[in-house]
Length: 181
Image (cartoon, rainbow, N blue to C red; front, side, top):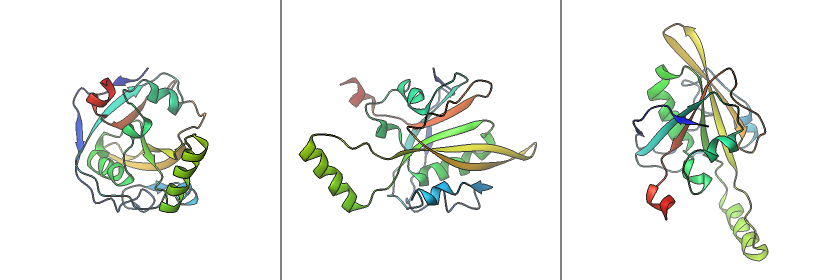
């Protein structure tokens, strides 16, 4: 379904984790209000340099179907932080020619984390983590100047992507040794 857009693995530099998509008014020409409404405007943790791969497709698929064709053990393996997404968009804004998708997790308050652990322990069930998709759409100011609109969707959304317009998915490179085991 998805094919590697580039054979080269790209690297996102180390980030302090304080940047959020909702606050990046200078980076994005518009930011959808759902970032704030859904509580996605919280700073994350600092991260080291991170390798990413870019995949592209024209085939129709939901987010879940797209990720099934990318090597990973758990969906968390593919997620970036919002600060890493901001960094990637800043450094590669000139190459945004199609809609580009990024997976990220909602930062959960420590009390909720303990409650999730208790539910898992007592009921032997995992509560699904809050995974979201940052949807970055290019909009052209001039032929050589691209601005980016930032939108967000739930990972479990049934929205079908593809068809006439290609899309790209940028994911963290999963640890191959872990996947093979």
